[in-house]
Image (cartoon, rainbow over all chains, first blue to last red; front, side, top):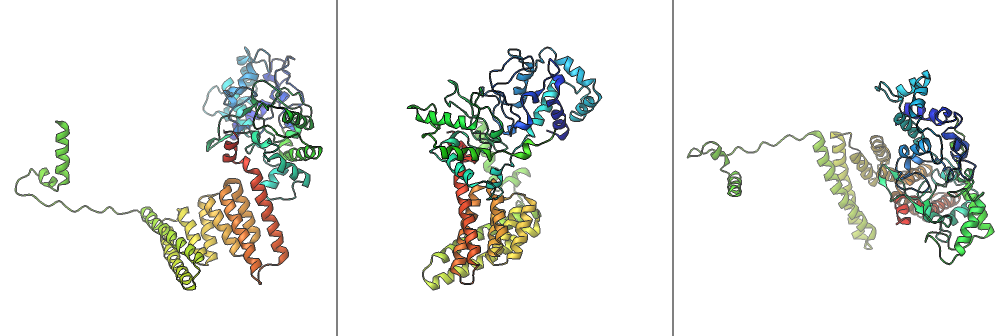
Length: 289
Length: 229
């Protein structure tokens, strides 16, 4: 990590010349205004192909143990990034087979040439796919969100930062009755994480009644901005998500022991939504480009 | 065979005849020179003083606990005096340690602790500040400093100390919150304590912090690991 690398990565994240059509970039699916998620149910690649999954929000990803919705073995941002760049079925950015051409294009751009040289000093030919990936990963590691009303309430001691309704929702969220924090634990509300002290446990995946396979527990930070929800974007609103979990609670056999045990009342649903909305970090989503 | 030779050599080296052996043996054996003590560095001396001080603090804390528990007035008084004496002895050790090695944050922290126990709050705060300068985020020093603020009725500073601790060390934050609860109880019991309104406000703050801490246990490392076990 270096400032030069992260700055270069930020430029590249928004760079459409990295796609096969010249009109698509990482930010096409990871919109900063939506906490780097997307308003579509599933992402659409540069050539118009639908991807199997919803574009995940990029929030505090530096602490993730693994990446992507369904595969715990993808354990670095760099490894994850090769998928959207090089995938062919379906095409995402469509860089496969054009890696050298894309690098040559960037190397011919004096501003990029200077930025790569600054980010990777001492390398006589710094514009490579490997460096490009490392730079974008560095930028993604700077996407830190911790300034929501919830954070101000819990960590800064601003006891008026949450409304009474949001506080009631918070109490319910963390209760064993609702069970939300059984999966959405940890400072990022996404289960286990890793930091300088190591990993708190294996990457957190759960069956929540939307797929036969366990899916990643996504972060809930900025969740009010990241609709639609679930791995395939099947649920349009937070209310629909809570309805889903209410229906799961009514099932005789829950797919995961952590899932809610009771259906939520209308008041409880409103309180939970107010709490989830308190996880929006305006300073994070208003960061300029 | 080789093992036997080694055992023999070891015996010779430890039996005081090594010098004679080295000199070729015979009747002109000379006594082995006494070992020359190596000069300790200031850092080593500081560490030694620090360890002595910590040992003294343990005894002082024990005496203080005995004083708190004693029902007999005489016993209480004797234990309290013993605690003060031992804190004073430990304080001297920590002053020695910090004088020898001013870069030892643990010694500054205990210098603050013993000073506070003896009622020297200004010295205590200065020592905690020094410890925290040397070791930013040092949780023990943050907690002790929070208790010093309480003793000085600096409530907003004590509240901030709690919040500083909360993010990184929930256990010590909980300890400071308990100290704050006790402080409120003591103030209420003391006719010359703070105004009822201020105490009520602080009491409410403490209750809300305790509730937040209880609710958000799932956000900690231990809480997360437990939920995914």
